[in-house]
Image (cartoon, rainbow, N blue to C red; front, side):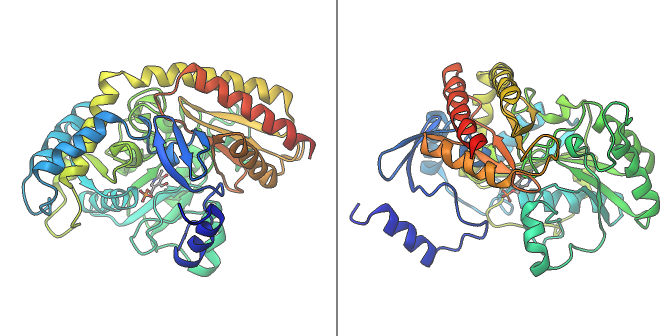
Length: 437
Ligand SMILES: Cc1ncc(COP(=O)(O)O)c(C=O)c1O
């Protein structure tokens, strides 16, 4: 390369809009192989964020890449929502067989944002109602005008003054964020007051025209906020009483990431609609809406269209991804590696006061960093420092949370014990330094 990395990153600032903020860390990635990525200087990193929880079979999974090559040779594109092609049919059958919904129909799109938009439109069509309830701190889209909320996570809180209010007809319920309970209560003595409060929002905030309640089973961007096991069952019983559809946004929790194929199964609920994206194509852009057949059938021509929807090559990538997960029973590795990681992180929690809480399921794990355990003041600065120290030592992890003080550990589902140990060692080194500074 004729230019230095610093020069290239300068040019990045000059020419490329990074709406999300400055990418982190300050490295320019040029290669990915399995659970590792390499930067322009040849340095290797263990990628425990999987390209923001996307490359869950590892970077460049050979089976997925081959499926893409094979489909490219046959047919790249033929506006798949206007033509019949083979890959979407194969993918719909495969996903409907494993979906937590039966009978089920699938539709395919390009992003999580679009999938959630479609899901909520479907819910409105089916119920003939118009209002939506979501959880505070959720992240379903950044489609500001798409009718799906950009919700009050750290990012929205930052952007809200400039972008203005969310769309009309949206209501936000308090999440089951037990570490910072919105009611100041403690589980299980609280009797899941946050779920009960949903009923009060339905009856006293909305105009009783609620089509759907949309939620991430575990809030990802919001800081791996993990509800108690019985939270969603309680929510579902309230929704059923009012004929409101449960829409689960499984953009981050799908395909085994929480230790079962879907988080709907982890939490024991039967949603009317599930959306998924990110990992579905292991890096190739595709998303899906899986809906109960009667709900899907309420959708009418003209309700949605996207040129790239159900793209044959992306569907081929997703078909290979789903096959790979099933053939290798990856959710079992997730359970084992997740437990190992959680055990290790709980040990670190007992040593380092700046860890407020370790939480999550499977390989969707959050470490909430605080200034101290008494005040629980969000340790935003420390979290950023830990991420930087980890990156310097060759480990990439994510961050999120209402105050960007939660380390997000969402590695590929293919990791081994050796990778877990390497990550824990690096994290401990970073925590040691951050605790003293
Ligand atoms: C839970 C969840 N839903 C939806 C989205 C939006 O997906 P996309 O960025 O593909 O539009 C995200 C993105 O991070 C997400 O985490």
